[in-house]
Length: 146
Image (cartoon, rainbow, N blue to C red; front, top):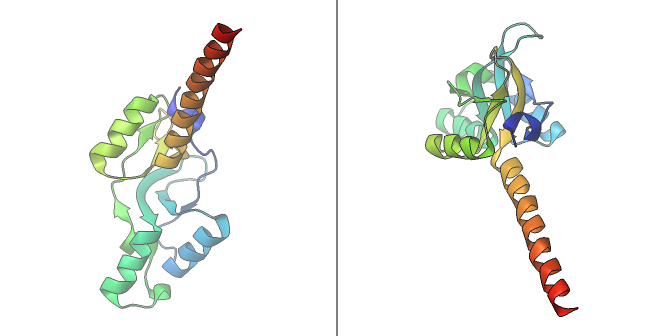
């Protein structure tokens, strides 16, 4: 299975100038824990940063600033891990683990953002595969008893 088929296809993104209070509101409204900070045209968005809910809390505490005075560009984690849509699940897990992050933008071959993959997405995929294996074991035991 490739990451491009598992990732969320409608990632939430903001520009560097977006006020963090608006980013936090957007995250709440869209029920997400992270947004991708992008630049470029709407047809060719490039990931230049990530903002998580934790980043917002840390920025507010460290700077003691009103969230309306902080921009996405000031709070974002720069140079985010990006994962190609053709990456395998195992490769994505290895990349997330190596960078110590739970989420990454997914990009097409030309670098355009097409989605977001999370540890939750990967865990759900693996759990479904394990359930399938467990069903095989259960089926085999029933056949052997009959």
